[in-house]
Amino acid sequence: MNGGIRWGYAINQWKPQFDDFVRREQHERALKTISIAGFEGVELTYGTGRWEPLGNPQQLAANFGSVTGFGEFVRGCALDAVSSWYWDPAERSMEHLTGPLSPMAEDDLPAMVERARELAGALPELGGSVLVVRPVPGAGDVEPLGDDALGRVAACWDAVGRATAEHGVRTALHVDFLSALRRDHVPALLDRTDPAVVGLALDTGELTAGGIDPLTVISAYGDRIAHVQFKDALAVDEAEEYLQPHAHWTVRVRGGAREIPRWFAEPGADGGLVDFPAVTRALVEAGYSGWIVVESDQSPHPAASALLAGYLVQRELRPLIETEKEAADA
Image (cartoon, rainbow, N blue to C red; front, side):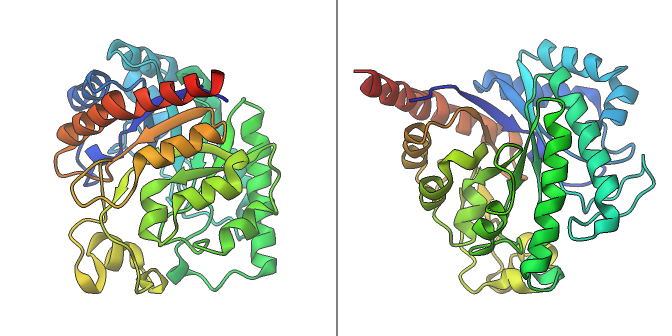
């Protein structure tokens, strides 16, 4: 049984608006909060332009002198590493003067590979090992995915996975609850990709909000899991509103027909639907080794969410892993 699990925290909840969280003192407070909560690393989110100083290697160099300089800044806040980088290719790039990129458009493939190679090239300098990607747009924004579309998507992520592997970085597909890959399409894509270079990012909150039990995913695809994100779900999209156009705004942000005030929260929040001890046990039993990144998805109180999540990890989940390891070794 593999016990090589490390705990990180995602930076995304500290930036609810594009012009928030841009000053170094804000970054320092956030990273020190993550450290004091008991986490070892931080996960970055891709972004572009001057309002995203932590968004890509060019901005890190502009704001910290170099990627290495940012790594020193992270370690100066008592964290060991940047665990991973989350990238949605639909985000435009001011640095490269490109618009949204699509894994279904063959003409976009060279730019996607180059962008992924750039992010992956920076990660080893920061101690990271995983590029987490949004593999397709939302279900309401594209036609239903047939065999041809899935073939193009698989070819794209295989090419990206080979490029990131050159830097020792694994590409991991992150399926959110609005994704066109929700439910049956997830295995349809995974089965078409090369397991040596493309893995799955298991997000407990996104799967649960989409009506998918994370435990069934671990059972079926435990050997493909390359990254884990722990967040709680406070509601389930039972009406399948994810099929609506622009569901990011109408469903995720505005709450859909039920006006859900908040879909996600830190692990262990009141009303949370995810059984984190059970998921943790299943990951250990599956031999998972790698980062578990905790997040709260734009918490209204980021520091409090990080500290509450850290309490759960330190008091319950870390001891649980040790107990499982001891039982296996006995």
